[in-house]
Image (tube, rainbow over all chains, first blue to last red; front, side, top):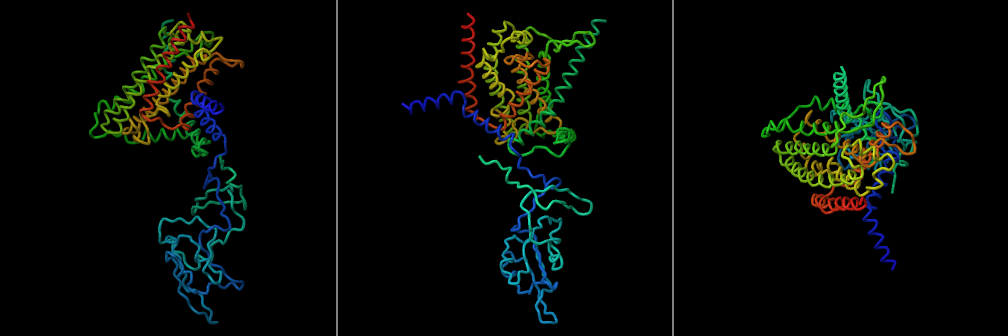
Length: 188
Length: 328
């Protein structure tokens, strides 16, 4: 009896386009839900998480000496062979890199160099805006790597941003912490 | 003197109507893209003007300055004729459409319609039937397989959906005892036709969707399988003609739905100016058109034909019979 009722109910729904009405109600709900668009670069910008793997950077120790001992482990483990290290010994007999070049055009940002490094000298930082018109510009040397920003301390959110194209293309942010972008995503 | 005044008034009304119809696609494309964006959790145009309000102007400038390309093997005469044939009928139809009773400006009563024909409904259906020529010529003259496929589909679709559409309004004509759109609206002063003719409205609106070639019946220009259908080979200003024509037909179907089934400028409960009531109802139907577009998938071609001939036609005929019996 109940099964027959169910079937007749389904038939009534079909005849009055219950499925189409359901679809319309769903899209109407989405119409008034928040948009997930992030208006990069001139209104908003994403701050990466601290675990984000962006542009590499080299670190210095407390005395200001470069931490890298030029063991070339990063160059060995690199799957795309994009790190080139040439060592030298200073007057105290410590090994340091004379040349430390990363070809960002070939790097796949796997982070294996960071894992392999015995001196915690190289890591992947928070910078992700370094596109260029020439792949030659993407070969980054030792001194540039020392000046790159490190791991993000806060991050993981969207902040207000401003696009500055006066000298270089720059997306400027002022706030340290943004709103959680994921809260806008409607999951049904 | 009076003749000159009357002629001048008609010329002014026609010019105003043409200007409105040519300019209305601008806000409508903006609205369509905004609705599309928000239904898909995007924002739509945001960069040109406030919330992208000037985006249609930018698009218009782009279309006007683009190369007007004619394919080498095209039938040049028909290729140039087709956009005009597609554009003119939706404009001509609006001559017969009333937007309200009359307003008094500087002591003179000015009617809100260009002409009050006693066979306005017949005129509307006759003229809108011409529009299919533009689409067929456009597809044929381009000499491209996608365009020909699109125009063949349009041909079959428009002819099969014009029949239930014509039958659907017969119930309304029977209720109003007139084919004049003005009389039809006046007859709905107390109760709207939708109350007596829900089936008629359903058939009319579905056939109108097909007539305006909107989703779920946009097989003529199914982007997924035909490139752009009959206007695949059109570019620049001629493409803009087809787009304006499409929006004009959409507006026409909305306006006809309001006039025939939703009481025209007769309001309910809230006393608003009649013209505002009319505009609000038309805006609602325009929204429904866009809402449908971003909700439903496209029907398959055989389903389209089956809906037209096996569902809508019997429904509209049954509607006529029941209305007639109820009248007796």
